[in-house]
Image 1 (cartoon, rainbow, N blue to C red):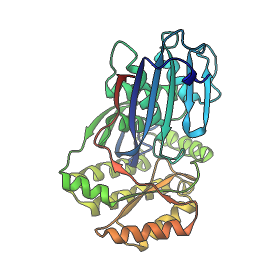
Image 2 (cartoon, one colour):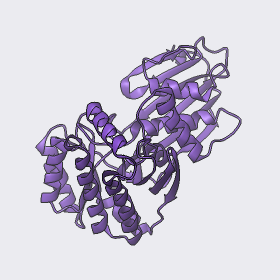
Image 3 (cartoon, helix red, strand yellow):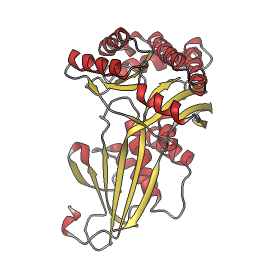
Image 4 (cartoon, helix red, strand yellow):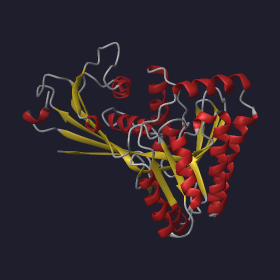
Length: 352
């Protein structure tokens, strides 16, 4: 099963895609919202995929998946009717329909913790589809990659899934997304000066709460209520407004207004269900407020586990003091260094 004892690869295909933070307006990019407005930011650490393509006669197995973060390497059987090891990876490979045409090993790795509510699974799927696309005659656009990645989760795996994570991974940067009819959306990338970009990057902090996000029962309850209330209900409109305010604040370089939009979005999340803001997240926010930060956003849909994005003030030493206190508060809490991603999906390949 290990290709290391066989011939050298004929070709190596690489791809990376950023994760997503600060998704103001999240929950409105869903089927039950109908239409939505979302602001988000693509950041590193990114998801990384590498495909080693081998001669057809070099190994017996056609496809080998190396899920490096999980320490698992195994043979994928494309003819199988279900996917039980890593369904997202296997379904994406099946969707791209290149099994039988190549013999290859695909390695997937990410520095971002699994279950951090930062769109890591979407970034992995986008990176994997982008890499596999290089083995096909055509080239998918960023929109097409995002829609394909979204379809893998929704249509093949029957998961509840919005569209914003895939779009952010495909496009990168700072985005204002308008979903005009689920799942179709336009992406407007927010262009700012280098000084604003660098200052935003310096002020942002990502705190991982130390355990994978898990709140399916709460989410199911919220979805049922929102479906009954309809797409124009106040709870969804409150979230949409924070996306517009975030867009305007970034264009103006107004970090105070951006922080308020982040905090307003977190309050709007709590009005969907109190359980979407966990006790761990509340404690992190409390410490952040004590250090004079400007705003905070529970990443993703909210619930137990996951992560919090914090927008700090002008002084770097105050930011570092806050991080130290948060990490001392709970051994599970961890700062994840991040950098704003000017690019979305990137793919390239070379002969060995």
